[in-house]
Image 1 (spheres, rainbow, N blue to C red):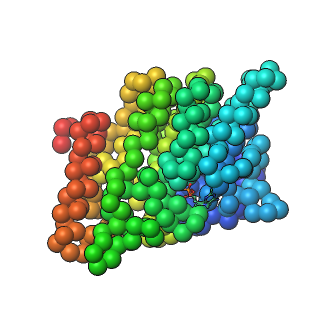
Image 2: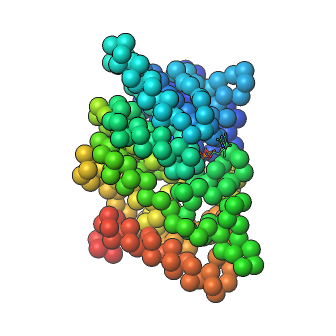
Image 3: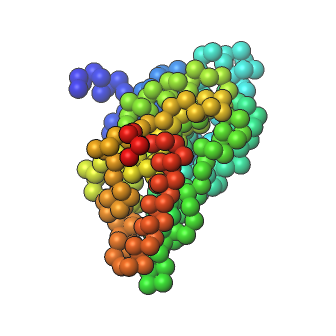
Length: 303
Ligand SMILES: Cc1ncc(C[n+]2csc(CCOP(=O)(O)OP(=O)(O)O)c2C)c(N)n1
């Protein structure tokens, strides 16, 4: 890659993310796709912390951090201020947060933003855990994952709740554009961000991003793990425009893997790969993937 190209990145290198951080790669992809004419409101979380170690910032676009819970509210204020000044054509407004900031503490702010119809693109970087504060469970943590607040042990098998279907909740609010994406497919992220920004109104994109220390994976495995999540059916990639499903990424026959092949790549599931009770739990997770395969028609060739 040419030095000038790296030097001109809108989210600069030299930040302090972990090696192999899925969220960092996804955020860079989003930022490049959105272009320079944006104002970003960022919730508290890893992305905010690793890009803005005082006194530096890795952002080469206007960027603001306020609180953990209010990125969507701050973005709403920016959007109406631009309108009041008659300058709404000068910048697109983006709000972004991790899954904790989105599905839990920022859920009310996001709901209000969607409900009021602001012209904002909201990006949720879904690491399936509160990465920044030591891997606590969030509403997007999947079933049976070990986290520090849903620990596995002699009588416990990790997180007992299913991943919240936040894209469906966004659709239900009337968001004009809703998509899921994965850091394993950066060109797909770019395309979806660009497409989202053609709509005037509320948009929501949820990007699946492995967290190296939180999931217990090697730093060179991020993309492989993210790809396996998609190709086992647990992470369907789709786009919904004005309530209609307009694209689904199909899984080719030779890409398709069973969920245990995805789970075995990560320490957070090691407790269910050990014993016979675990086998039943894996069946439950496989059933979630199978239901997605059915619901979204994920497999080519009717496999
Ligand atoms: C009101 C409030 N509660 C708790 C915190 C502590 N806190 C900071 S970041 C964070 C976790 C962020 O997790 P997530 O939103 O999933 O983003 P990630 O770090 O995974 O990118 C927490 C709990 C806070 N800053 N403010």
